[in-house]
Length: 131
Image 1: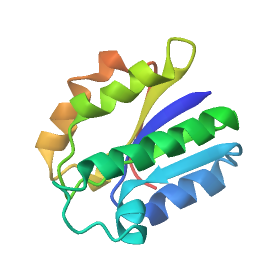
Image 2: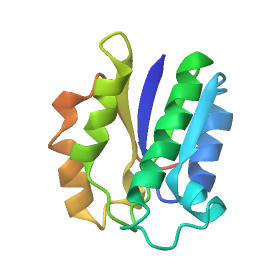
Image 3: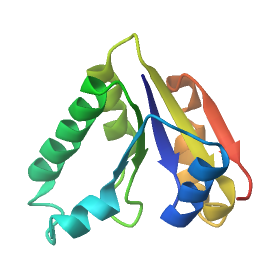
């Protein structure tokens, strides 16, 4: 099983990536979508609830032996350091990867510096210039 942290702001580009590359056995955890579906308005007070939802989805993907594609919500509080806690949950036998859609973040160097500064913590990395 593999875990991918997807640096993408628009889900449409990621869906195109999935379709073009014929990716099967995927489990997508889209934080923006979860926040909308669960009607989470207070990000700070509902953080524990959100973490439980995310961990439940990760556990479901592990049980089904599917690759996990995690799409963070970059508009709210996002830290790559907190994301690396999931790596501990996955264990040593699973791969922890990053997929970056470069053009979506080229005007936000702080986000790119954060992920590129932590590339050594990922098993593999893929940077997609344009999709």
